[in-house]
Image (cartoon, rainbow, N blue to C red):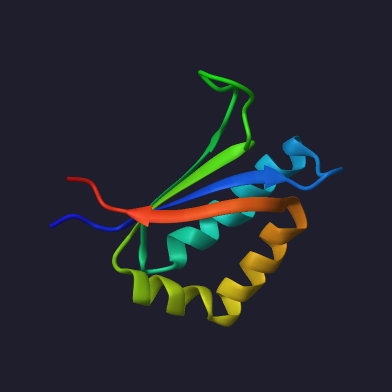
Length: 102
């Protein structure tokens, strides 16, 4: 059985510091994600460049989740809302999609 995977292509807000954001991911985001039962794995990747043209985003977040409904419900919890509020201190523009491996 394949799990849904969520992908967030993200861009730092103007003036946001990448080192501070990456520290926040390591110290706050990763530990919190481990406590959210619908998240089975989670990694943030820094985008260093594009094969063609200019890179449009700074990071890609990859989350394997149990199912979309439970994940959405978990993010609506008080802990999930707090995490998203902190995330939005750093992240401006983003594009979110989901899919599954085949």
